[in-house]
Image (cartoon, rainbow, N blue to C red; front, top):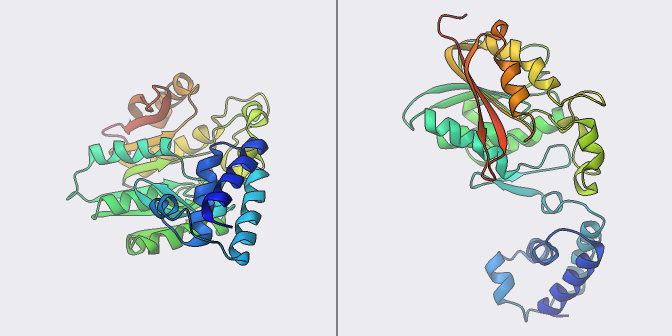
Length: 290
């Protein structure tokens, strides 16, 4: 069977299964099996697949039809122009999180040193992207999942920044392993239990729940932000910056939370994403606070 026919049948199957972007999914999965680039997938439509290739591709199509995310099937996802390994042990990096990297790059020039901490690093997307974009950056990346840290270390090695990032196992709700930091970034769990119950099966059934949900039923999803605020306040140097990804309905409550004088933050604000929705909390450690 040729590639064009396989793609047509795969797209029809995935469309009936109700998955997002069935044609794109079919092309990406075919590219993985055949070792072809997206352009080659379009230009080599007459290529004949071997029985082994057909069987392998059909197996991936069935898994995609059951809702398994394409990123897990491919084993990779792009983030800030870099290709990251992803496994079911880590949350799939999303474009919205790139806003944190943009904000950091706006604050620190390429030749400036910056000492940072990434809380709940997962795949290492934030830490690796920051180190890649700022050659003088050095950081710590914390996660309580050993499996996630293994993925993050491999991504750091892949992008040649492993020598500037120390990956540590730990819970950022308990203590932070550094002081006098210039920067803390975090993409913590912030989905409420009510929101989680409404998530698509593609997310809820496959991505790690512990990386998504914060708090108990009826909560506001900001438990992890409350938990990290005191440690972040102690770990940042005066003038240091804290950036936290949040849900689009959490901006006002998040700002109010970080404005509490006991944490020692000032200039608390929210950055919107490309859709204009609240996405990142920004706070600066007050000068003169230690």
